[in-house]
Length: 123
Image (cartoon, rainbow, N blue to C red; front, side, top):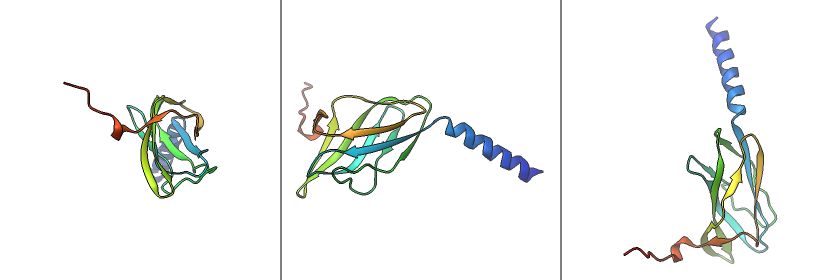
């Protein structure tokens, strides 16, 4: 009886969690550049991209993102070209809608900045 109750509880938990899960993938559309440490950050969570470098034209495997209200977040990644690495952060918010699979394309039209080059303007 306890085993059956535990099984039913696990199934119910799985069904409830599946309603609040999303799949997030990243696509590299930068010719000659490899992406590493790709991540999407919102106030509530961080979704990491592939653990391996993302080659030009490649799409990462799915990252499971759990949460009922995802909304907008910031994209950040390391851009590697000919062995030279630079860390970049997207200027615009990237939206991830709850209950949907999302592919975030990183291409030449993405507006980014290097946070290490920003100067502190506070007095």
